[in-house]
Length: 341
Image (cartoon, rainbow, N blue to C red; front, side, top):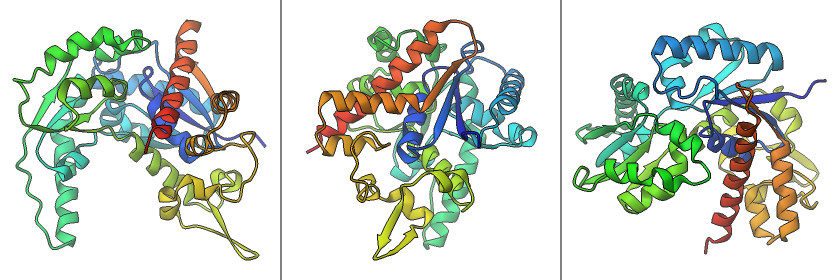
C-alpha cells in the first residue's frame, strides 16, 4: 500500500510554521511541502490569477501524489480561493485565515498585518467572525459588541523580502520600524499576522511594538482543525497508522475521543512508549529528557526525513533554503521549551 501524505502549500517559507504544528500533532504522517516559488508572491496578484494558479497547482499535485489532504498554509490563497478550490478538487482542503476572532475576543484595538489581497477580503471576514461571535455569546446569555477599531497594514512585497532574507531578517527591520512607528499605533492591544510569512518576524515585531501586545497567527488553530477532522473517521489513514493518542486501562486499550486528542499533553500520549529517539517523538519529550546533542540532531534528521520539500522553479538553492529554515524552526522550538521555568 502506498504511503499516504498530506500536502502543505505556500508561496515560500511562511507555511513551514504550519507544517511544524501539523508534525507535532501527527508525527507519523509523511508530508510534502510545496513552495510555489515560481508564482511568488501571491499577495500582489489578482483574485483571478490566484484562482488559476492554485487550481492548476492542486490539480497537478492531486494527480501526481494522491494526498489524503491539502493544507493551504497561506492566508491570501485561503480567503480568496478556498471555496472555489473545494468545488473543483476532490481531496479535502484545509486553509488558514487571519486570527481576527481571537483578537476580538481579547478586546482592544487591533492591527491586521497582511497582504494586499488578504486585506481586500477584510470586510467579508469581519462579517463572518462577528456573526460567529454573536451566536457564541448569545448561547452563553451574553451580548457581543464589536466597537474596537481594526487598522489594516500592508507592506508591498514583504513576503518576498522575507523569503530572500530568511537567514538574516534584520535586513527588513528598518521597514518594520518605519511602518510600526509608535505614533501611528498608540493604543494597540492585538497584532494579527494575516500572512504566514510574517510569523518569522515575531521576535522583531515584539521588540518594535512591545511585549505587552498580543500577537495572533492561527498556525496552531489550522493544525488542530486538520488533525481533528482527519482523525474523526475511524478508518482514516491517521487512525490506522498514527499509534499515539491511546491509553491503556488494565488489559483494555481504548482510543481517546477526538477533542481530547488535541488537548492531551504529548508526554502523556507517549507515556507507554519507552523506546528512545529512534521512534517518532515530539519536541516536548526531547526537552524533558535532556537528550544529548547527537540525539537531538538525530531527532531533527528524523523530522526532516518525514517531509518532502518541493519548489515550482528549478532553483535547487531554494529547496535547500526551505530545509535549512525548517530545521531552524524546530531547533528554536526545542530551545524555547527547554528554557521554560
